[in-house]
Length: 396
Image (cartoon, rainbow, N blue to C red):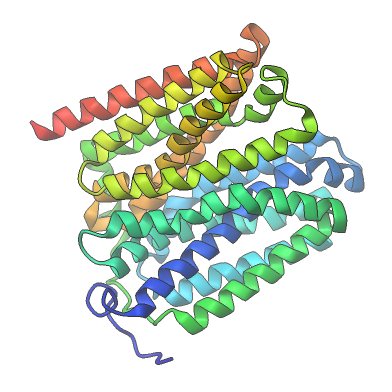
């Protein structure tokens, strides 16, 4: 494979290497998202082995999200001019090393450090991978290309996290991290062989990139993402509890229902990428209303099996569609600094994830687990209204 630099925007759309690169980026996304969220499934075993409480170990999840939210934009702005193939290789090797350190961690402090390192690299990957996929695909095909990369999220939710949790039961939580380390190196090798070296972009000062924050339209799009992810995770964070307590699903079967939720999300991923290129704000509003309908219907139809399946299907499709929809929408709002824009959206998403978990958790003591569906739906309707309002302002 030639290592001569070639422009991403010109030569690659017609080349098979461009499509192969997008597939590899999706696989890398699978590894990265699994690394981020697998900790949730490993918490009980990890806490027992390290002699800490589950709540103390759970702070590692919070630590990861906070690091992503705070440091992601600065690091992406600083590294956005780097040659992308080398940057992605560095990220994957960093994930491999961090997962290996996590597997050998003797205590919670070392494990915390092992989680901080990939948290610093994750937003850099998402910001630049989305931008690179859009360049590889060429004009008019950016939405579909980015949605293909975001298939990694669907794959992680469908297979990576459940299977990683099962591997943790068989091999121990340390074995699960060793598997992620090996998988990170494998994907790095594939990327090295299949992705062409891309022409580095011009170096743009951070102050110049940060000018996008002066654009009210861009800031509005980022704020909409906060609302969207708050709505999504007000319900999704407590979906397992909702299935068990409200729908009366036996605990041993909840995992299979969650896997089905991830499976139908593959449909949403494709639909979101198909429509967002032409009408980003309208597509956001439509899927937010679909999300609200799915959440409410899940609670109302929880005791009717066929109704529950249909409601969760609607919820799952909308939930997964909104991942690429929000990323593409924010990037399109700042074409002059798409890598930074993508990372700011990732930071906004992590802020919304944290806020949604808090909001849903606060509603449960007052109104029960089923309330998360109604509260999440209310926020989703608010997000849809904000998207329509922003669209009306932009059109004027």
